[in-house]
Image 1 (spheres, rainbow over the protein chains, first blue to last red):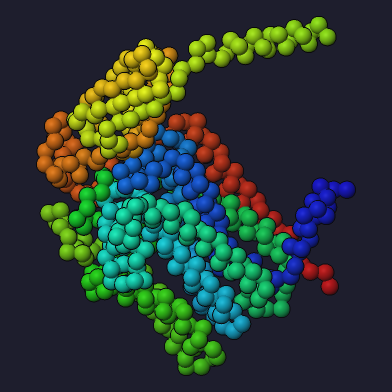
Image 2: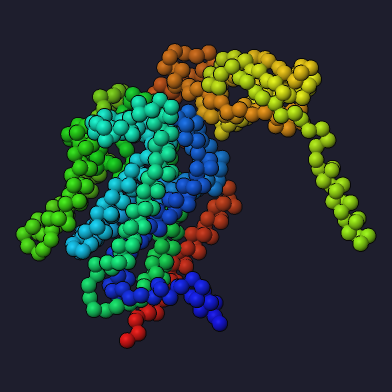
Length: 335
Length: 183
């Protein structure tokens, strides 16, 4: 009895030898799974970081500084954590674009698409709450923006208001969201997303078939290369930390995935904070409803989707290069 | 049988030798406040400690260890004294620890040291250095010049891991065998 057959018998690994379209072995069909690999890296490194991080407003900055300067393994894991977050966001957008371009949202995959859209929103939530935990100037301004946004959103934004409860600081509540509420929601939705992929199959046509185990092997190869790349970048470019945050000032720009929202705030004021995400997520939610059959509506959806994506990239570039602006009417520290 | 008895006797001797001869009483610390201000004095009370002994009071946090001083306990194991919180103490979460003379931790309580900028905005504080007040009052997004902890052993281990992942990944991708369903 070989080890493989012994394991097959006990773990039911034969169930993985189901058929999938051979095209699914291409890289553009692996982007979702690679996002999952990045999320796994985030979870593992995040669990270690929780053992060293102090979520209280007064202890946060000192504990991050302690991690960077005094804890070699935690310091590298923090860098991997930060770069994995960037990798996850790049990969999820690439996955979104690839699925959009092959119209993977059409019937019967609407629920699969919508679960993906909510997962994207959760990823943004995780990226935002992660940024806000460092206790530095960028974090202070991120929290100030969230509070302003929460006030704009009315009762919907109640959780992000500091006066939600006097017993716990907003930063500590953001930490709770980052390590429990959002990951649990992500896990639940991810389970639904993967189950739907298994039930509905990937939207890859073609008569040629392959076995899923082949796909898994190739996926493992790409995943290992991704892990190596993230680790190498983490060593070459350690994530920084600025001085402790001073409230009432706007002197920084946000983490790059939020620069398109920053650009909208530059152009439309605080309303841009609601407008830009509303436009993106509204479009993504409506795409499967509008684009049902080939025809004019389908062409319009496709053009609008590509235009939105290009606009987002342009907005990120513009916000990165444009001089800083005050969006909350705060002091800009002499700028 | 004799050998086993000897071994047990030796083991018991080791255990007895390793355990402290006189365990210290575990006390209770009662600072006047749990939010400390650098440069201020802090009254700390304590009770249920070993009678007629001495305890060392220490602040321990991510920014380091600061010894506040040594205080004797009275005939019922109590003490009360004011200590100066060092003006240069960085803000953050700390543990106020009472240690026996032999270093045994006999009591602890969590405290926080107030942020310098919070005080700076309220006015200059005694003992505040120029650099601290500048850092506190001038917000900046510039990266702090922190040197990440990177001992060679960790870097070498990481390099091996990176090379192993890259090589393993490449090998898996180069494997030409593609399993197709049986007809």
